[in-house]
Image (cartoon, rainbow, N blue to C red):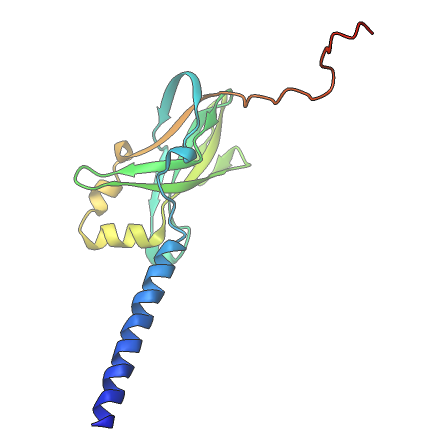
Amino acid sequence: MRKHQFIYIFVALSLIGILGFSYFSRKRSRIPVCQSSKFIATKGQKYYAYPEKIVIQPWRGQHHVYAVFAVPNQYKTDYVMQVTLPDNDTDCGTIHNIPSANSEGVQTPPGHYLVKGYLNTRVALWLIAQGKVGELQQPTNWKLGYGEKIPKKRKKAALGIDWGLGR
């Protein structure tokens, strides 16, 4: 009887450990979330850029699923780009500036700069496993928002207040 109790306790503790690990690993996931704080507030109209080039090669490892976007020089971009498939939720990816004018075989158009939007490899593999590689390759499913960024309000200085003392 003690042997059976030990087995049940061992199985229960193992199950609790596995569930706890999966819960905490999901909370610490490095997959970017499409939160409103990741999108910039703009003065006036917000515009969207579609990729000049898309690379989908997740079998090569991390950072091999991305799109290259050209953004006009006078604008700031969102902090994430979006991939929206017709029958799927929107997934977001991180944005990184490209320092050179010629990158990934894309020539920077005059008056623009290039940025790369990376889609998480796990997300890309999941979509490919669902047979959505054709949809991933469509430039209209990838977009990056940009616009004239609203400057942050400055706090009033504590000094320099007129106290009415007539100095």
